[in-house]
Image (cartoon, rainbow, N blue to C red; front, side, top):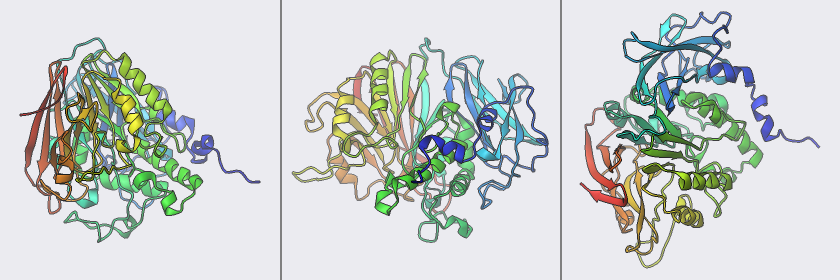
Length: 504
């Protein structure tokens, strides 16, 4: 009997060598690539990025692509490796360079590099840039996290999700790029896998080649889809503005991971996951610890912002067992252990789907969505039973802004409030949106939901040892152009030691 490839062999079958991976995260000083200076002109059209800051460093990212929308997914790059040099400085003029190095951009990883920079000072702002051949990249701004024992005075952040490029302009990112933020949390649906055609191409003023009118399934198609979305200048500006802490939801692979509903075998879906995960790694500022191994990729992780905040980045998609687990046993144990041992003032969960109970029956009965934490109530009860101090859940997925309180008993409005959930509306998905829509009354009929708005935008937050202030930023339209002004639809404060939401 002919056996199918094991999950362990997927990476090797995909042609990614250990050397390509290692050199892409930072090549030794003596390593050089023959012909590596013969780089096509203007290779930085997908911008630059940084992510996952630690007290002594961060990961940098770029991907060489002089022709980002080349149909073969290789961005117009020759099929050979190239040296990519980087500099990190204390000033945007690079008069005080503190680190230099290089990585090798290999065709195995779509000519992306992920150099991990360390040995820097904690709690500091830095600037970085890349050089490939004769071309210099745009300058990016990033920062290190505070030292672990430092009571950092503040953390300013933005939360974004659900950026369907074809549904409208990334106006929200145009405004986010002007915010003074330390971090961006992206909580899922960086790309969408659907075919793009006249039915869903609502972003006015653009035309696309027919190569985009196909559901994304192959590695080349996933690479091209990332290139299309990342070609947006406002998204590139936010990546260059601050380090990102990213996780995925479902559309980075397929809507709801519903392979059975499309008649796809588990083995074929594993193959699709393998190429989708590889493209995700290639296009995001992730450390080598998140390198995929075929259809498996460890994306859940923990970061610290001194003693001010512990940040738990979750993956509520990959390990699901219907009606049993949304996290999987290993991730759930990791999360609970981290929350129990935390001594930070704030405990943050950056994750995908709504945690608060949302009864979708406005009458006497109860109806819940199985795609959110409501479909895994026992697991949610175990998590909330920990009574984690100053629990803040950052969520995306639903394309609407929502602010909710997490309750000891969601069916009893008088029960204790034990956490706060802040749901960021979409950057682009579902087009223009409106303050009220067909779901407004349903969501607000749940008494622990304190705010709902159906427009596009992002969440802006600022934590101090005393309080968390959250602002819901909205734009009125995105389809016709990117010029809509930004407004604050609601502001809340959550006081340390007193979970819940107070409107400002």
